[in-house]
Amino acid sequence: GEEVAQTPKHLVRGEGQKAKLYCAPIKGHSYVFWYQQVLKNEFKFLISFQNENVFDETGMPKERFSAKCLPNSPCSLEIQATKLEDSAVYFCASSAVPQGYQPQHFGDGTRLSIL
Amino acid sequence: DAKTTQPPSMDCAEGRAANLPCNHSTISGNEYVYWYRQIHSQGPQYIIHGLKNNETNEMASLIITEDRKSSTLILPHATLRDTAVYYCIVISGNTPLVFGKGTRLSVIA
Image (cartoon, rainbow over the protein chains, first blue to last red):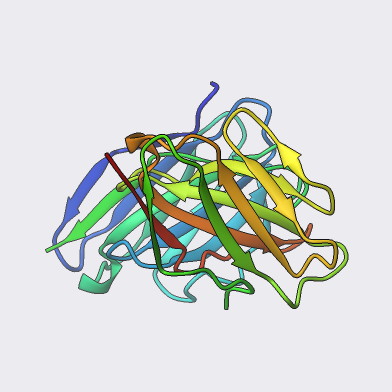
């Protein structure tokens, strides 16, 4: 498609439950990025992919967070054993080439609320 | 940490030009200057980017100083819909976007 599509728009989970977020990049874009924004504050980069391969995971928490981009499927970000502090808006972005040379295009995010 | 500094907030009258400054004194030769904005809680929207030369597109103009240590985003005729947080980001080919606190632009009728 012509836009980055993120689903669901809102996700509510009880503390300790699993949360799974999805992102369909713009058709033809090889790079996918995940960012976390807590309470409209600064964005935190989590992880990026080049096709199905991890490109940069320097921002990814070492525990509970995992992500995948499999062929012919939306990319996913999964949080195991969620905590209250995971409440945030998670944005996905895609780009056609490595970041820096062409812009990243963002979806409208998934708002995750942990109760 | 963000490599840019921006004023926290600015006001602009509707129909006037909005000039948003950004300092990036430590920019490297291969780093681009990007501008994004976030309207309410939507996803960041790409506006414009440049390396050395001034750039213009249908949304805005980007003026980069000759020493590349600062830049200005210009919205030529601001409307109420341009009210948003504007982010100036310096990025090279292998680094993620690092969003600072940005400038909250309020366009006033």
